[in-house]
Image 1 (cartoon, rainbow over the protein chains, first blue to last red):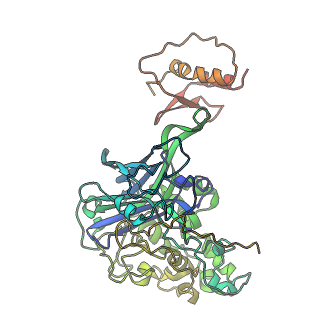
Image 2 (cartoon, chains in turn cyan, purple):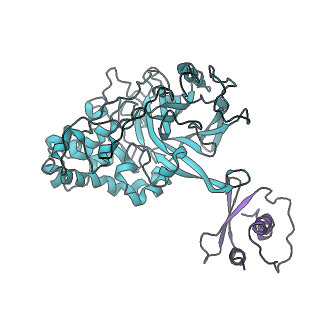
Length: 459
Length: 81
């Protein structure tokens, strides 16, 4: 998945596990950018009695780089605090929760937002309320109301939301991780099965979202609102992280862990699928602990991706030109590590300079699309991935096709992609909850009462 | 680093060590608490028993000491002998 459980260590620590990062010019407020970081993957909505929540012992951050060095020029930091109102009950809620501050919610959560810039720390908001999770029809009868109450204005045109949402990512995990199976092309696989549509493995699961909307002027290096796509200052890099304290010791007297020492990064996410399918398993945990500015050490996995070799092996005879292509993948390097320089795609660039670093790169001078296409830039829509990433962008298909060779001609016009390169897909469609069209955009989370278990078969 | 001396470290961790494993008395003189000492729980981490480095984790800080004698005494204590 984009980054759900993508590395061995973080797979054991879901509360700190970043799943997806998004950055896009807000379609309903185009002088702002919306930054979204999702955490805590694959939440069953009915996961009570101790429902999912942000970690009070985790430091969540969204980073913005605007000087082309792959470094954090602006950091938005989120810290959470949980209260128990009635310690004499086991209940998450003691009655219907009609408003976000109802005392019937026995375990309310609050957070602060701090901006770090130029060595200065500014608290933008404190004691901001998180909404409860969507427990069900009796407990959270009007979830849209709770969600709306959890959108907080935090000054200078900024707004923030932190709470449970429906996951917007779609992918066929069951097939992709079963020896690279793409169900629509099952019959061409080295271990053939009948062709069929893809199955969206993430459908009906929730995540925890941190969403921040910020005026563009507060994010660019020169505090302007660029209109020229070729303006170097128009491109910002974005990624999200989670950090934990160096040491955690279980204190039996308290029945919980106590933490000591400085914060250390345990999760990182810029471009979708980077750590997931490009970085070898043995290096994934260290990758999560590092900053983008040092990503040159991972460039070889981008320039010669393992998946490029696997596709022709798993689908014999389908990717002959890809199999024969022996040059470093300068197209993938540009898309994922430096941004696309001016002159490669007509009327577009998101180049941040030669420092190889995994970040979403958003050119804020590209206005929101009137006709958004889920395939983003390769689909002719420069407002979408890899120009930042919108909620609905089909990043699995985009990256599959890119690795399959569809984007090689951008940098090597002599290369003619295999016919399959422009057709390859995991076969899933976006069957997740519909986006809302307004901040924080992700769909409302599925309710526990409303959830029905899926099916499973051993053979 | 300058705010944490070896003596202060011993003072801060002695009770915890004694509460976990019975260890013999020390030949060193009793430490004198200073006004700037840590007054919260502290974790001492010797990552490499062959080195002189002790990392003290206190609050949101880390204090790194280079003190082979201290490392040896911690290793002796950790051995329970």
